[in-house]
Length: 304
Image (cartoon, rainbow, N blue to C red; front, side, top):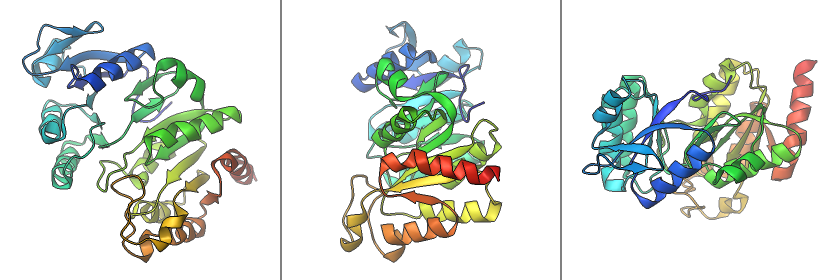
């Protein structure tokens, strides 16, 4: 099992004829993804690496008998909200938004509509999702050869606000002999479609997942929400977090890398986040290379 997607997940790419989307198409196809169509208005009848292009999502869905589960949205920021809404209104349940610099209000509206439709948005400003040796949806891992080197099938879930660090953590786990069940780059913006806490029920229900590693940064309440969820639901999963940007605690109002990493008050600091996570039973690694050993210790404790 894996969460959110499997080797049978069929998806489209909105904005497929754009430069970044063309690269995403090739990388995902090379990894074995089932991309059944692409959408660029006015480009119907063309193809990208053999993937047919349609004028709109409705036409792509109709051409596939309504059997499309997901979409990667790779369009300019000013068109992103419309693209997400178009996907949702045509019954697509999993939407990975790789576009960055999408206005917050538009993201909030799209996320609210997704909730009403029972759909799931990952991103924006993310690299997507991968279930190793099954499927990937997005730019996570880069070219297929690099992806296969960094990711291995196994029992550790990975969640990260940083796309690059999703792969860094997975590669560290792989080198230590710990494969991954599903890895999710949730996005680095202040508002994202799915938070750590919102992913937890999926990992919790997945028998294959036995532990979780997360990459965290200053700013926002995601870690506090995760800590609350873990305590409230008495999670069965050992969780190990790496907290980057500890120097930011003395630099209020500054941004660390992503748009969502602004330290505005005490609750946003790394020290406060680490304290909350440790109080909820989440182990916090000083360095990324410590994650595998901490996960093994967590698994050993669960067996007692």
